[in-house]
Amino acid sequence: MGGFPDSTLTDWVNSLTTDGIEPIAGVVTITGDVGKMNTVEGNHSLDLPAVVEFDGAGVFKKDRLIGFLSLEQTRLLLWLKNQVNETVYSTPCETSDDFIAGHIFHSNTSVESSYHAGVPHFNVTIVLEGEISDNQCGLPLDEVDTYERYEKLVSEQLTKDLHTLIEEIKSEFGVDILGFGEIFQRQQYPIFKKIKDDWNEQFTNSIIEIEVSTYVRRDGIRTRGFLQHVND
Image 1: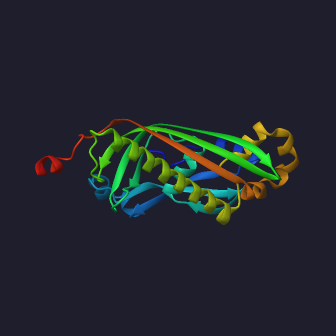
Image 2 (image 1 turned 30 degrees about the vertical axis):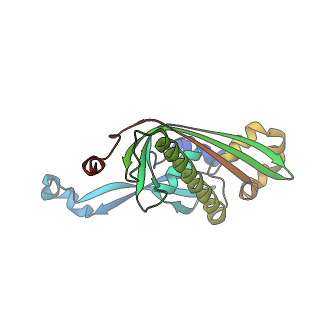
Image 3 (image 1 turned 90 degrees about the horizontal axis):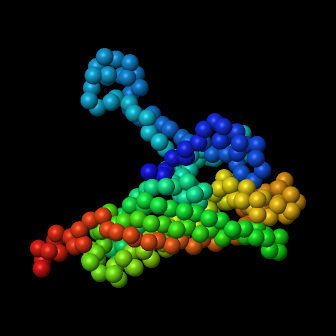
């Protein structure tokens, strides 16, 4: 559901040898007792004694592993790379600690670049389409205002999460794993030729603006919760 990079060894090598991007690789962990997997009892058990789990992504600078992203951070990274097709995204309610959950069934990310005063600029536009799959906030889904408020909540929260991720990548790793350098190379090639040798530093100093537009096309649950019907 959008939290694990669908990459091959060829993708990793391409990122390693291409200007304007550093490689990432999916991380898996094994939890449980691996030794029991080779026993008759372990193979006959309904509950597997050990399982393989997706656990985010490894961050590289050239061919050297320099750190890791969590599963949630990896999903946000893939969102910026336009590699999230379908996922579930939760957003806090306006006035409580509860959440709404949206089933995102279509997402598109586009990036435009420019160069001002020696600094790369990127404008990221993300358009989401989805449905509400969990409504803990309690607003009635038979009112248009509810959808508009939820669309605004999701857009604002995702924008905040993405900015947080970008700042963490810049400060903790200092490398362009987003592939924004590739985009800059395509769109601003004469400038990129002059600055490609220190692109990671250029990326760290870049200004990135994000605009998210969310459209709830339909709701995936009843318009009103059963408790609201009971109270009425």
